[in-house]
Image (cartoon, rainbow, N blue to C red; front, side, top):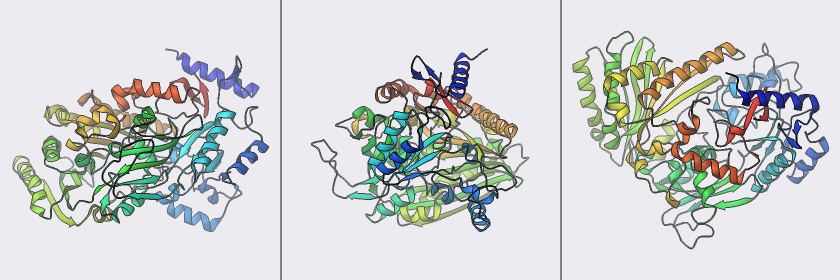
Length: 577
């Protein structure tokens, strides 16, 4: 069937290419691109640069140092970039580099045998260190009808922080943490919220937040990757190994400062701009404005009893997934007992199939407390399906910070990657063993799949300020966030399409198992079907209304993001549908 929305977008793109303006009835039909009449002059860009103290960057892809035809070619620097390409730091510290190559369209990898250009990257970047810099960028993009994106650390599995032919606001260098150790009074409110909190600038990353709060003998509900930045993490909801105990990261937010699509620097909390306060906590980043600072409550840093475990059998064992299915069916009771953490199913890797993971329990020094949760499960597996090998190792940590310093996610990056995910409740894990087994056998076909225990009673019974958050309501009955991903070779459209199809096939198995839950927007399939419901459920209509109210002209557009239905990407140009 002909897709008329796509056809209209193509015609609009032809118009902007041929005439340079793409106007219909006086209204631009496509975002301005370099070379079109709508694209700002060099003088206009110079004025913008002067207004922000010289913080406008004309960026060069980091991989360009490896290409002799590029002006930045440098053989010595090339060796350094090649050695660091699979390290998260190179990409998070660069103004335009993407964690995953495919989100920059593989346009300049550090391999001189491959082509290199800037086509997959933003044209200009604002290195913002203050809200006024952000405002200037938003005002400029709105005035000149330029595609606008936001990059923080770039730790984005769905590619929202990358886009060609765009202006990017880079908030990574907005640093600073203010501690509130005896309470916090939200601006414009006549109340003081008891307990401790921190106000963190937008560029604050997880490792920085954990180390700052450790000085207070506190911690935050945060992610496990060191480079994950608070802004994108919390606007997506924010799952955590601590979430089953305290609630999601979005549930901890007391106040946000943001710059709206209209260029207004506003405060949102339970007393003012309450719609934005709700939307910014789980409604997705790069959508309602640019977060410049966030205030989140902290919790006393708990003692941690950590358990590393593994059980495995021969890859061709007919009972491998019988045992795995049984184990998954015990996750609700484990979570209810206070276990949280990061189990991973591995299928056929090094000739073995099984489960490996790191899990924790809080505020105990007695390793038997956590070991006793797993020993009966392993004993049952051993008695019922002989042939498995088992390993456990319990370690005590005096604080959450001490545990994190040794157990953070190393986040391998620097290759093409697509992901799919699903939130799973108790019935999906335990109600029908046959259905669960079939689903996870398919879900794990890529070699491994995560089955993270990052929800439970703390999330279900959280009481966020202001009466709620925009995070997917399915979190309030979820136990497990399951993910699977596929990597693929660069500059190979066939491989990319196959990886996308394979990931979708994995995830389809869990959609059938759990059709009425959804997925976590920050770790998901960019091409998730029925994504509005999958990512936001019953919250989507309200989120869309807020988007249309605060951003009627779609200054911000990303995918999959609230309110993006009115535009279509055609050959890297954003045009109205």
